[in-house]
Image (cartoon, rainbow, N blue to C red; front, side):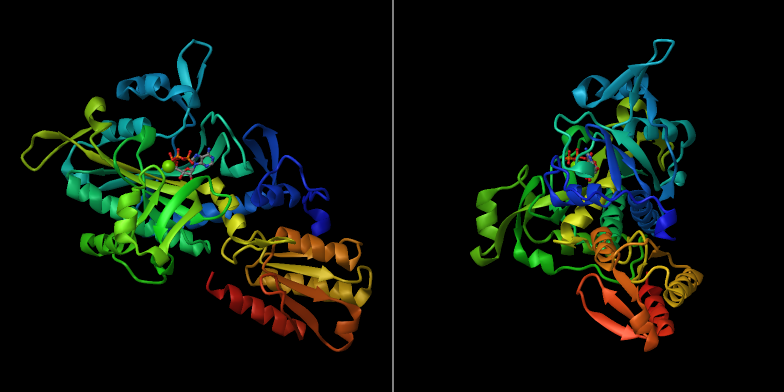
Length: 446
Ligand code: ATP
Ligand code: MG
């Protein structure tokens, strides 16, 4: 992509309304535009990262055997009256009527609708286990939308729902989600720590939240410092193996880690030696719940068990804050000059900076680099504007591409370009072909 043909409305000024760094950087880098409190348009750069995060979520869900569907954003209120939540949900739920004065709502979550799908089409234990999920826009009329995409009113969420015959099976489904979430966040370059949490309006006490540690996080968290050494890494796991999934849950939840909702100061002191006790802040990027028959019973979602008698299914629901993750990643990975994208989610793989636009040799070298990198199946962003080098570097740093190739007439005389890491700032001079090879190697694993 040539920058002159792209749409990258970067801001020179720091927007005064943005209180935290990720919000400031997303606005400055031209990723989002606020249209109303907590409601955003996703501009090309932001939309690209959103899609990459979404792709990783889909890939990891597929690996765990979970099946994607898409449910409507507008849902009939009657479905929510069946579970009792239409009245319980309160003012966070956006309610409306169609021309026939039928009550509708903008989905804040979708337990009722997925339970309706289940009861219409599944009747035997032989069809279980089943996990259906979607990645879909949600609306919650938050009292205080703030921090950009971190706490929007409209936001993009992955929500998955599990259906099992027994509590034990449902807990396996829960553990499977825990494992798949650990993998998902690590692939995005994040450490998200599962912490014992509270159910809230979704219900159930058997629940963990995943938190990314960050000073700007809205949750207060209490944990054993040892937990930050845990990594899921590249382990192979058989998601059908209940014991293996349980072992991962045991490993990642053995140490004290709780949000303020469930924090117990006495227990904290008993279980964690003083030098390992940490009180910090975190960003909730996901939550998993097991809630048994809370929805299946009132809504009549039953299956015939082994003895032929109908039993309500055991359910769980499992969410990832897809749009919030952009903010979380930026909070975890930036410096004074801008964003530093992890390779796995970067909107473009490499930036190409032409130091002397209009110089025939430099222009040709940049175009060649651009085309060779594109031929690898990667996306370069070529800054072909007629601008000073300083401005081009500042833009590249701001938008956070992890690698930059700088091309200028002086280097080209010696047959070299410069390859620079956004993260370390280290540069290396090398012939253009070698720079392309290096880029290919760097992204081979992504
Ligand atoms: P919070 O406590 O932050 O309000 P929640 O616990 O109500 O979130 P869940 O129902 O668990 O949210 O939703 C699943 C995920 O969706 C959350 O872990 C979070 O990452 C994301 N999420 C929830 N509310 C918002 C929001 N208003 N804006 C952006 N993402 C959100
Ligand atoms: Mg939650």
